[in-house]
Length: 630
Image (cartoon, rainbow, N blue to C red; front, side, top):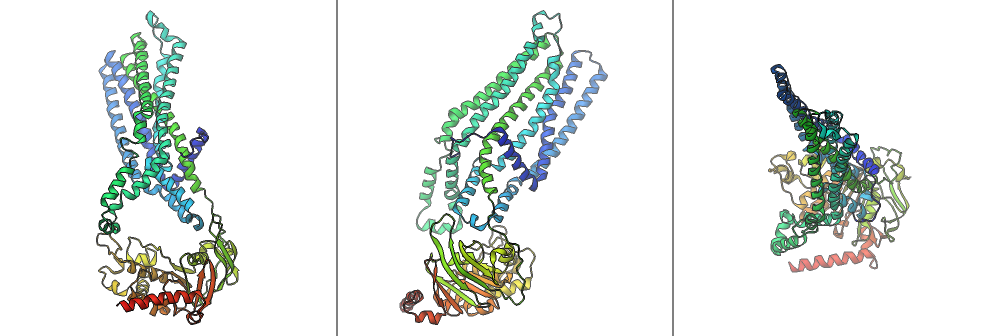
């Protein structure tokens, strides 16, 4: 992690964070847990069942050789193997069916948080950076929530390997070497047993400790890997984006992009820091882990074979004890290694929970917004000022304004003058730093948040259409009124295009999902977005640069019938094209976060000392020069 000097996470804290992650996943994918648990149990006990019956069979072959007894064991081996193999296949199939959607369903946890987070937080750079840090760690090596599922997959079989191993190996230490084996009687000594068990436990602890030590280098590598993943996410796929293809070719950027990508994205190359660690300390720790396992296996073989040689048990029991203790060792090692990885992953979970635990500070209100058929909703800004979180300067200052019911208001001004901030406050995406915004005389913070925003239909500059049928895009729902959707599309100027679409409202937009999908231009997309706002049929309609992507003819059509489009709604829209403001009842001119002028187009143009007059003449001069050139 970035701060390598911070206190290391305790195992208790790591377990607590991991269990919390499991609880989060259990709510959205309980079937995965059941399948994983059953798969882990049967994969762990299957070897032990085979080992136990095989040991009995070998002992009988080496001893009495009773045909009835041999047949009995053969039948049990075949039957148990068949049943266990079938069960393993069933649970493996179930697990894979659940696991193939694990990543997509796991991301629901983040989606739910981001969709329900206060807009003031989701709109902040710090939250975006935090989320990207989580995603890059996850994409790098699945650290975080996804790794917690991998830990569970390791823990379940390890637990049952330990239980089964203890059950089948206890008799190894309780069975004594006969007295006639004089040279090996020391194996019956409690000290001998203590030494062997201590060696087993020491090796079982040392091997995973070395493995975890090697894995810890991934944690140190995370900052660089995160940056390289960001680099990869842009330069690695820039050539596959169709919208960039023309620009790449016009400026011959293909070679430049490839060169930059090759030079910068070397985090996992043969000369990278990770490769250096893999060849050095990381690799050595892993080798040490494997060497300890091999050494312990040798000690187990020696001890078991010596006791068998001394006559403590038969040949079949050798198979049982070696298999049981080896599997027991694997289970203990897996458990301890998993706990070590759990501690490493806990640091990534801490970052994840920082996002998930981020509180919603915006008061949601309790009052229900009155449902009025006459749309008599009056909104007033009363001495409203606003600073963005973390900023010392005001984006808006002392704004006083009252919206006339059913009127048309144009908001104009230069970039950065506060127009979009004004709209965000109106829609209560932000709360004012100072002052009040009132709805029918009541502070909007007292209304239920979802109720208040329901009275607004907004078309933002950065609206989003989905690769779904046209009708669903307009209605923002799978179920919709087809005639009403068509009416909204016609009003928004999309009627001609709709008539020529083979599948009408059922036509998919874009080709991401349906190869027969319809590719639409930016202007057409904007008309669909306007139709979506109309379909919501809210008392207030807010359009942020509603015609920015439209050609002059389409723009003129929208403005000519804007009164029909808005109907009895109160309409507010932001525009840089002042020629479109003529049809509005009132114009508010923003400058440096303040409303410096307010009035009709005629009154504002008549004020030659005003900002509106300056902006109008600058654009009028441009239009005049353009017409002269033509």
